[in-house]
Amino acid sequence: MYTVYILYSNSKDKYYVGHTSGIEDRLTRHNTGRNKSTKYGVSWELVYKEAFSTKSEAYQRELEIKKKKSRVYIEKLIKG
Image 1 (cartoon, rainbow, N blue to C red):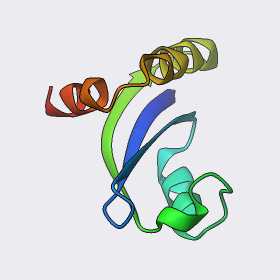
Image 2 (image 1 turned 45 degrees about the vertical axis):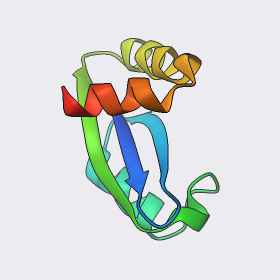
Image 3 (image 1 turned 90 degrees about the horizontal axis):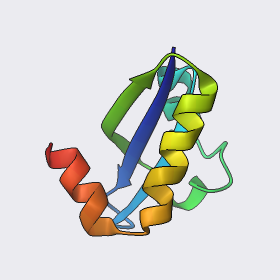
Image 4 (image 1 turned 135 degrees about the horizontal axis):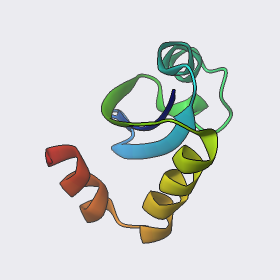
């Protein structure tokens, strides 16, 4: 199982989009500064996730979200 996820940093007021096969471990890595992209936004909160059966599907969905380059789009996803 693979997960596309969106994290939110209240201190930086920013979102981060990624994909993983282990969401709990990945969130821990983000919140302990072990990820270069999110190192300065600690602490991150998981605000959205989608499950996929293959890594390829998850990666494609991650790219789809990122290509929108839209905070409004991300916030609509989160609200459902």
